[in-house]
Length: 136
Length: 112
Image (cartoon, rainbow over all chains, first blue to last red):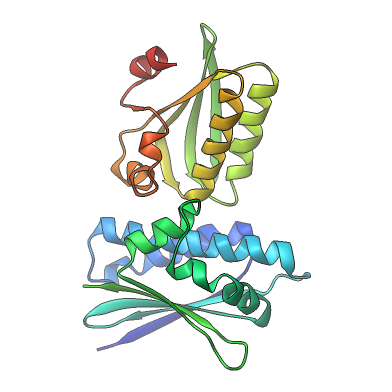
């Protein structure tokens, strides 16, 4: 059985902690131990930080929304981060970095080290998706 | 989700005791404190991470920046940390080779 939960937050620094709380709140429904849930909170913190900093640098106020969906599948937990147009441009511009982290990018190193699969799926209508998978 | 920073000094060594979470929202507070210390001529610093509940690369970046600042004055930064969830990000990023990390304050003081 598959269950999905969707979250939408303003792409601002002070809401990144809320994302970690949201992931932690789903822990009882995830087939993972506490350490793996902590890893996923860390990964989401890194991704949101990357987007929030990019947004604050490039986007005009008000900040765009940052939306993500956590899907609990029998064989994995998938997190999909989709975007408003402003966030999308940032994600596409850095698409190579999502899958091939540079040595200097601590956050990207952490993301790829802790998740089983990371891919950016470009959309045709300014709606790209960053998809993360953790297998059970 | 806040970060509290206690500052103590003994024999020319500054101890920064962190309590809370270090992320993109709170890291600027830590950066500001480190910059202030260097501006005051404090170049031997110990950062106690034992009561940090969460830290991501925002915190790592601030610590690396602080290390660069003190090293330019022949100083040093040592860390106190025994928490596996915090040590993990230092291992993943290779920063265990950059920062001396100790289990207690006495060991850290001797290193700086």
